[in-house]
Image 1 (tube, rainbow, N blue to C red):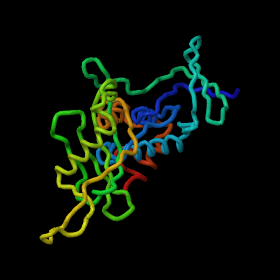
Image 2 (image 1 turned 90 degrees about the vertical axis):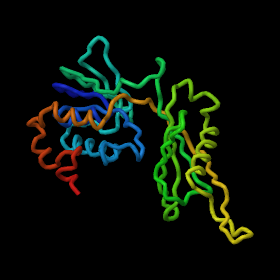
Image 3 (image 1 turned 45 degrees about the vertical axis):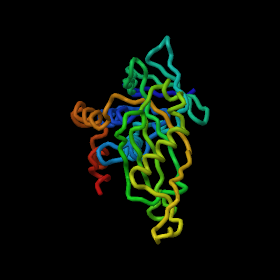
Image 4 (image 1 turned 180 degrees about the vertical axis):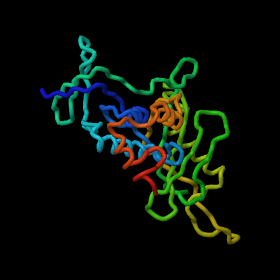
Length: 267
């Protein structure tokens, strides 16, 4: 089994973990990557793009030696300074480090002691995809909080919808929070906000007639609702590290800062 030795290793796949590795010049081992949606942003920058920026910079600096190929990480209880990496090709690699730091978000919001989740329901529009709305905030009390619309590229201006609900693990199993009930609520909200279905000829008095809004459920994504604000966390990581260490200082000067869009990221 091949092996490597480091002074310090960071383990984590969050933006915070990648940022800490970059700003301190520390080797990082990443298992998988977080699932981000197009509306997940730090400032105006999509989190998926920011994650790729940090990963590229770390890879070019030689600080992300396994890329995204890590399949499993095994810790040695008898030797806390040693871990075994299993890659996607089923190869094993022994890692020794004087310090191993695990960076992850472990604080989630709770309700009555129960973990709160963000639930995303994705819908495709069969009738009612042409409108000017990009987002609708739901004012009524309940778990459904927001409707987000995005263009799909099939025809210019056509939009599909994803809803955001906040609920506990137990609540998402209740019938009132099922995919079907969320579909009915979403349809009602779309109608209440003036969204109509496709045109369907003229009425007796010559007025335009429209079909009803029709949407179909595609999938449901669920993730814990985190306490942290990643925008603030990343800026704190950068300030806490007081600049970059000498090992990647020249690389950082050439590439710039992924967070503020300087260097090669400048448009």
